[in-house]
Length: 255
Image 1 (tube, rainbow, N blue to C red):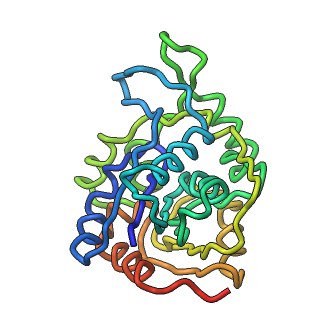
Image 2: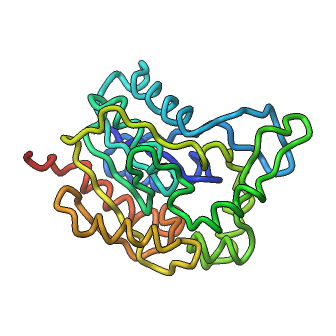
């Protein structure tokens, strides 16, 4: 069964490279998709006004494409991409065999990404969003950099952290404020949560902690842990691939 991986905010499909290599070595076909609208820092290309709905539709479009051959997939979302795969499952239920959330947000209907943060932090992020002179109405969230980035993403190795930082991009603010609109949330798709329980920082508000606590006690979820920081696919790609490979080979739970 194919594994489709969706990156979180500021990242790109590149972040899954090592994990995909390990999965492929185990005989599992894997594909990482690159979400649109993220901009290179200091090198703006064409500016796209992209929101959460656009990212959901992009993934749905790929699932229905000839490249995927219409086969159901294990859909994996990291961090912000939990918002995306939740929406995809609502719109493309028949294309998904299993949902896997890696240290990710899991929204209820009409929630936006910002609702997982305190009002103070959300308003600050919105106020500090930047734009380019060519498209002043399209705002972007800057990525964390330096020590804040290393702590927040859980990448203690300086050389490794620098390689990641060099590739982080500006993330569309619209994806932060646009609420998800679920029409028919699936009840028959198995959901797995992989909680990165290594060195975490105050980047994650208590609301995120409450989400994880709720999932951990919910019999409708399979809850797993991995000893790593937030960017587990960077620091522990083989261990993550081992977890995903096991999920790809285990049959769905009986309903």
